[in-house]
Image (cartoon, rainbow, N blue to C red; front, top):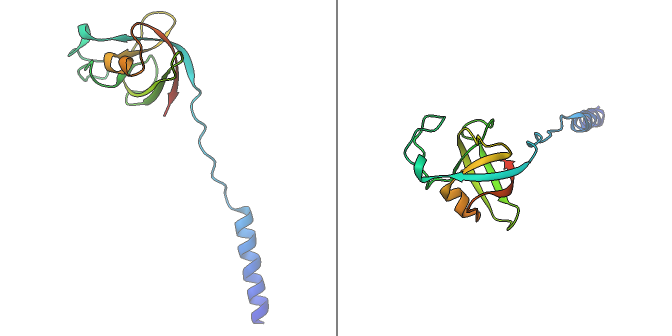
Amino acid sequence: MISNARLMLLAIVAITCSTGAHAEAAPSAPAQSGVASWYGPGFHGRRTANGERFNTHALTAAHRSLPFGTQVRVTNKSNGRSVVVRINDRGPFVGGRVIDLSNASARAIGVSGVAKVSLARL
């Protein structure tokens, strides 16, 4: 009788393990590519779209649709350098651009005007 109980327990454990839920990673947001620009001194201290004061020395950026607080890895396609920024503003408002970087963010990846970049939401 004991051996039957052990066999039954082993069968239950085997079935439970084989039919257990498999956790799947949430799909990451698709990468976005396009042109980045930067904005700086003239906006320093002004309120951003989320209400905080813009700091040209912080690693922040403006994006048209990503939620405020979203962390984004921005990679300069011409040199491979990347920086992680926090979205705290809306923009850019120039056609064909996908992100406006603070001066510090742009400098971190070697952007002095506009540059082709890829964005990855973290």
